[in-house]
Image: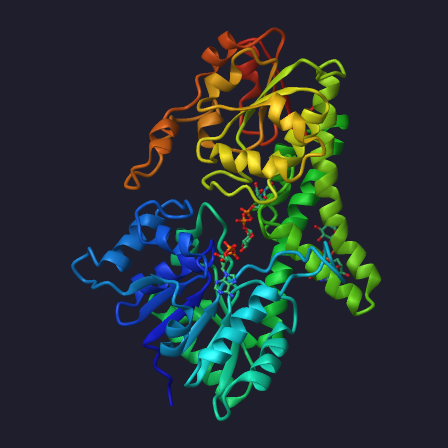
Length: 492
Ligand code: UDX
Ligand code: UDX
Ligand code: ADP
């Protein structure tokens, strides 16, 4: 028999839970989807048009399902803090809570913190009066499902059945909606028992509303858990490999963009995730590699653990290398110099700053004594200050030497160098003027619609003027004609 899902409860209204639920609801008008979170402020924000996260196209999808403003749709997307009621009513529960790196005790700095996951499952256990399918959406260590099953077995009302599925999310920030609408694959891991397979089919049917069945892959529960960690480790590994090569390029006179292009044409290698940069950031790569390495170590596979950790190691090296080169170019002293930082987010089209390379670079140059003027089209001043205050060795540097600006021109005023740390289209001097997608009506976007006029930047800066491009988005030759001295990653 097929299980028909009528109500879905998603626990966790963050980067994963919010967009995923919105797309599921918009594609399944017959299913009621409720996103719950114990953070009341977040839930209230999801009910407004000032959503707690920025994603191109997200607001339109949310509005369609939440407000029912399209002809075919009545509202079927809800946001609530009433976690217990929503759990009780749903047949299927998506676990989209955060699983950060542990900060205390055994495995601190390496292992995943499963506290939020466990407490969500205890909530499910206490609130359930009927059978549930529980879906791991959050990235979890291998065999986390066993832990969840154990907690449920010991705490739930007798006679209830809980089936655990693994359905990892592969969306990347900045492209979440298009990734969700048109995914490479949907992975559903289950126990290979009749009830496990039945639950997997029920979830597959939810995705089947908009995704072809040949892209919905059903596999063993533990393969699915490991595949998520493996995917992120392999993606990050490509970036670290290219970044390691970029260091060689700078010395031998090769150009990393040409090397990446050349190797990427080999179909066995492929062209994606080969862009050299100041270092990868984001909430997943570092955390997931460290988690994978920790699991390997706990299995006594020490060489395997070392292998994966070296990817994180190269990433730290790349960030430090970028700062060192900058200091060298600026005559080995940043004291009293002013640096304009263009971009603080860990990549374009997001205002997320988790693990952004900008934290490390700005922290380093503040410590070297530089005055830093940061401009990012989306990241708010409070967020930038918060990130730097929680990491910098010297708090007083942030107070005295840091200014957050509202335009690239304000940031460039009196600066000795521009440092590009995020590949926002508006910073590039190549190609067409940018126009961000309309319809979410934010002031920040009006500001971001025009590209930076580098001639004007040059007029505002001190001489000699430098550009350090941590994203290889500028045409160095064109900037040199304006009088800039330009250093790009992986180019001599
Ligand atoms: C390789 C490159 O493919 C080729 O482009 C280059 O010019 C020379 O080196 P070759 O060594 O002949 O060619 O074969 P290849 O198919 O790449 O396999 C190399 C080794 O890796 C073999 O031992 C193969 O069995 C092994 N291999 C390959 C794997 O273990 N797993 C794989 O997925 C692919
Ligand atoms: C990543 C995975 O792509 C996604 O599948 C997973 O679900 C979550 O983690 P995300 O962190 O949002 O997504 O962004 P991604 O585009 O992968 O970029 C991660 C970091 O790597 C960014 O800092 C980005 O700037 C950097 N990057 C990416 C490079 O430096 N070079 C590249 O070629 C690609
Ligand atoms: P991700 O990037 O994985 O989506 P986020 O931190 O953006 O992570 O989102 C996770 C959300 O889950 C947060 O809003 C947090 O408040 C919420 N959350 C964590 N644990 C629980 C819980 N036990 N019950 C309800 N919400 C939770």
